[in-house]
Length: 89
Image (cartoon, rainbow, N blue to C red; front, side, top):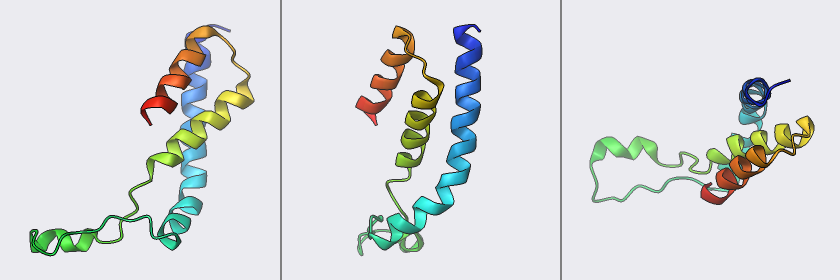
């Protein structure tokens, strides 16, 4: 199987896993109060954003890491992409 096909399959599986684990992680982030705080002196229209989880990207990072491990792709290209994603968050 080519690298491109493996990458497409991994992307699809990571997206699917994100949809599955996302609804479970967001309440945990809210419970831990990892949310956006809004300044009082800012626009009033922004006040509805108070408490919005700001660490939602962790869902995509976790799902990509899990799929990478499960697929067992140890090519240099895949490892560089994964390390770049983890490094830049």
